[in-house]
Image (cartoon, helix red, strand yellow):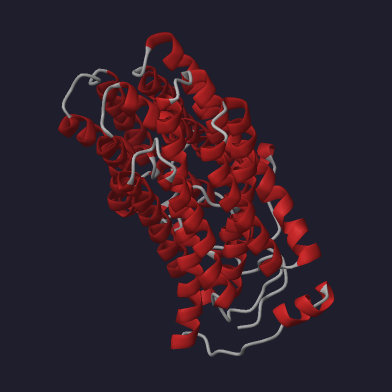
Length: 437
């Protein structure tokens, strides 16, 4: 079948009334595909950190290939739309899933730091492309009246999938081939619900972002907070497994240590969002960051403590630090008209990606100097610095009037610009052609 014929088939319409069981089934299939992609990606990130430690790689080396993943992710999110427009959604999704699946196995076959740097870049680019396509599908299959709900569900699915991926580290020793095969299986199985879905195929949601200067003008706290929280989150995602391994935790302990942080974020993001809706949102951002910094100090001083203490501090760190990204996006959106919401949120997504790319390597340099505690010394310094900046900004600008504020919306971390038109406060006008229902 020619590419033109394939595109014709992909563009065929499957009319389905909005809100019908068939429509819900289509969205569920897409969310299942995204969930499997994130499970595999989550497991692979922690698995590589632990395996690298077993292979005797230095903290700087681990930080380098962990940062390379986020660089690849940024590149993939930029170039994926153009590739899809030339070849088609299903073809590109299948190709990227296949490459990512092969890359997962290649890590186990070629255990070499320089090779892993390249493989992590490729995997990051593939993962970004997969998420762009899946999020474009979600946009196309979601009615304007339901988009906030779908974005919230997507955020929960992404968080739960990330937690599940961490816990799967216990299935087999990281020194074996099996966990790499599990990653490959998850990525391959993600093709099934997406390929069989009758959700239609949308035009790619292209990037529509506000300029850096515009973001700084709109919300200095939102912009700076997004970057600084990304530094700490990227450092934790990339170097957290190395920290846990270096202080002597078992594989089960490592997986729990990582998973409990995201569990905290999942449980507290809505309460924090609700509080920020009824008070100065900057004060909630500032308080969460400050307490998150204290949790980091506790973790840095607790390398010889019991697993229970470490898990409690990890929970506090994740519960208060990770939701700051959503709070920063909400604060920025309080300052703009609705037709600019999507561009602002997309711009902050790019800023978040830049911070996440820098975080792992920067933290690894500190760890190389003072040991595993250096990870949370770095995170504490980053969050404390931002807290000081936030306190200064509160004194410089009056809070947003309650009647001008938009209600809090959970923004999934590790997402792309393609999910932003789902934001319930946006104008509802997403670039790209609308998919058949």
